Length: 253
Image 1 (tube, rainbow, N blue to C red):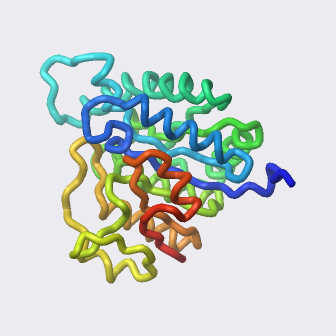
Image 2 (image 1 turned 180 degrees about the vertical axis):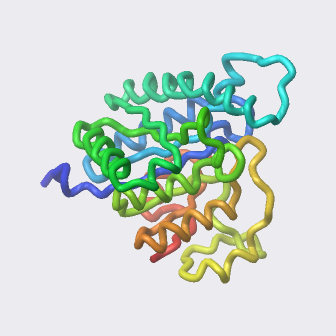
């Protein structure tokens, strides 16, 4: 018996810059293809909301600014250049799998007011109702928090709480949180007990890191949402996690 639209679980999938670039400096269309194929495969069981970084990395593929540095205003300019290119990549590839995408640029101020929260939720629910995959990014041209700190980890947890998601999945470049023996910690309840395994390093391409992911997981945990930290570098990472055939960390409420 087919699963009805209203029976499908909502999954918020956060894809960071390092996952999209594979540790390089260019958006890997092959990884976007991998993600699109998986979401198409899951459409009858899940409604997927994507929170996606990568606009700044995408900008480097279309323009070379002179006198480049790490100034915040330069990063905001690069985000403005790269965001349309990034969305074009998603739309072109997702269309090949008979999926459409809708861009949503949000800022933290949007979550602070009840009316704006309701408007955001109504928009996202309407997109999902019509089979459109929302692709969310922070509005980097006017906001700076994720550029400086979290690579959209925190934003993804806010979106998960807003939508009453079943699972928040954070894609990274390891098989979840690793202990001192480099083994995956498969189930976590008390985040304070595992933060000692986390280094301070962030990815070279993004601004996140495992600490920002655990902080996002903590927010989701408080909202009663299960959070998974999975290895987005591997093929079929989403399918494998949802079918229980891969190693990853599960932070349970």
